[in-house]
Amino acid sequence: MYVLIRRLGAGSGPTRTFKDEELAVDKLSIGRGTDQELLLPGDRVAYQHAEISLAAGQFRIRALASSGITVNGRSCKMAVLNSGDQILIADYRLIVLPASEGVDLALSLEVLEQQDAPSVDPASFTIRLDVLQNWRPRRWAWLLFTVLLLGGLLLPALVAMVPGWQNTFRSTPLPDDSFWLSGPLHSMHSTIGKDCQACHTKPFAPVTNEACMDCHADTAVHVSEVHPDTSMFEGERCASCHHEHNGEQRMVFDDQRFCSDCHGNLEQRMSDAPAVERATDFHADHPDFRLSLLQWQPQSQSPRQAVDASLQESSHLTFDHATHLDPQGIKSDDGDWQVLNCGDCHQMTVGGVNMAPINMDQHCASCHALSFDLQDPQRVVPHGKPDQVLASLREYYAAQFVQNRAGAGDIRASRPGGLNNLSELQREGLVWVENKSRAVAEDLFERRACATCHEVERSAEDPAQWLVKPVRLNEEWFASSEFPHGRHTQSECIDCHAADQSAQAEDILMPDIAICQECHKGQQANEGLRSGCISCHSYHQFDVHAELAP
View 1 (spheres, rainbow, N blue to C red):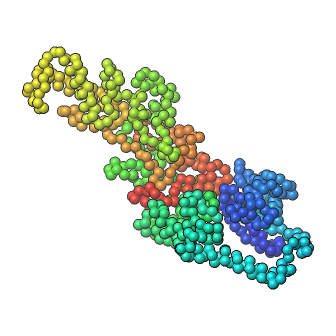
View 2 (view 1 turned 135 degrees about the vertical axis):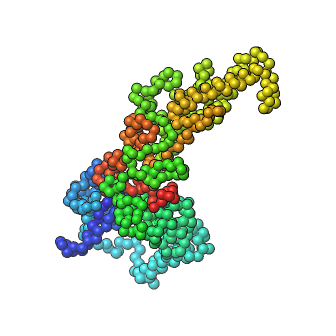
View 3 (view 1 turned 90 degrees about the horizontal axis):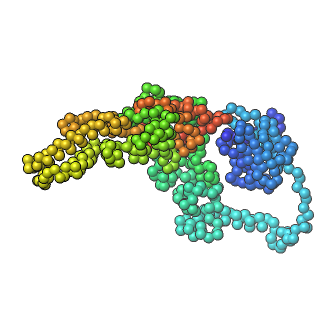
């Protein structure tokens, strides 16, 4: 949520000064700890004193400290906030203001006038500085200043600039440059430990992109390095989006305004016409989905095309989703009726992003067994190339002929190619095996097995040969975005993919943007699932194909 903090200064009425500050947070944490979103210094404020969150369209404040909070003069642990409500936390007063456009919550912050501190009798001190001979208060102040200067500045500076001192001081209780850390390292950088020079190659200088790339050499850039408008990113630092030493929630800054600053007016920022369309918010301002389809020649992804009914996929399958998802079920080879659902064939890969490939033996063979002989229903041909199927059939029927006719005549071995030396029985066997194998293969390829799911062509007559067109299923519909299936398990597959209405394999069952917008309302919405740009798009384009790169 976006929070406006208006810090009130001196004065009163219209002349009172103020300074506005905007925060993009999941929850507004309040306290005197340095990791709090709204920092309120003071001993009466706890390190984590309270937090404000948005739930069910209401802003709620919850006290985290035992001293609680005061809302509209009433002490409480939790309260629902409305415009005009006053919140007292120690010596600070927060007032809920009417939120302006682009802001979810607006608060004014002012420091109340503190009560005069009670006077303290100097005689009550056990040790008084003014009674110590030769050590006046000014000398104590200079001594303390020297200690702080040495321990907090000079010694850590020497540790940072003198390589020989770094390991020595960092392994001792003496002050080192870790005193200057603004916060703990992110867990992803925990292996760096106290080696500040791993990132801060120059003392007192910002971390450079080159220092980041020393470890993240495989991290892709946002646009192709050969793009003429790559200069738009000159001067941009990795640290502009990745904020270290700010706790776990600040390593990746996910505010979509970082994206919309460029993608809202690309035509003005780029020298060439942009290959992508304007986008500033998923629900309010986002182009229609465009799919990337497989091309056969060459075998690559095609330029992206808009989702509509005219698009078709050429996978060389004759699969029918509607028949397989019939609520009455389908009849398997063993005569049983089985009701199928999408999850019987489509299963997520580890990580829950993509879907695992369909496998014949695992998903199809229980209903589409490749048996060919009624007398031996357990014998099947391999699910492979046509010549492998023919070789398997010849082997099977040759064994059948030998078994049935072994005692009918003399079967003698002969040299390879010496057909003229074969006995009449052997000649008969060769002809019978070839004719039988061809007839069964013709039935398998063209009528009841292969042709059920595949596109099959007879490529030759003598000897008979068939071509089963290779199957190529598209596995990357969205070339520059990612859809995590694992986060959508609460929805049914047919809520997005109209598979139960698809009667041909060429149908593309990818949803259009309107389906997603029913739940995902964009990052600016007050209801629904608030989705920013990085919910689907990665800034670093690892897998963008060269021909698709903008």
